[in-house]
Length: 128
Image (tube, rainbow, N blue to C red):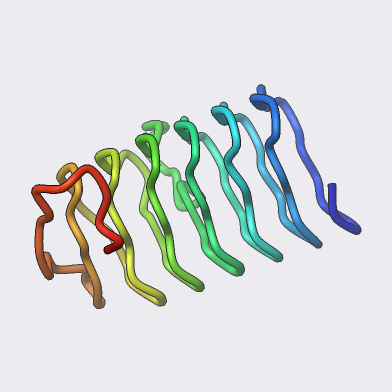
């Protein structure tokens, strides 16, 4: 657990890592996931092996009390914003500084503001 990091009302899996000044509230996190420096997560269910980079904001703008769901093996880039109620499919990649306002399919790569589909990989992993 990093310096000044905060976890409140959250169930975390083993090997969860939270870095400096990150905050997570009212959420669940799977095995081997991490939350980067200064990231903020609220009202979100996060799968296993998922990485949320520094300064990302997930589910914070929650006016409708909908949960945000992030699948397994998802990568969320630096400064990305994922709005409340959005579902991110397993294996998806969210580009840095993207704003995601709608659901993202499995193995999709999205980028931009608002986020648009760049490509979908048929492989189990996008890297490589």
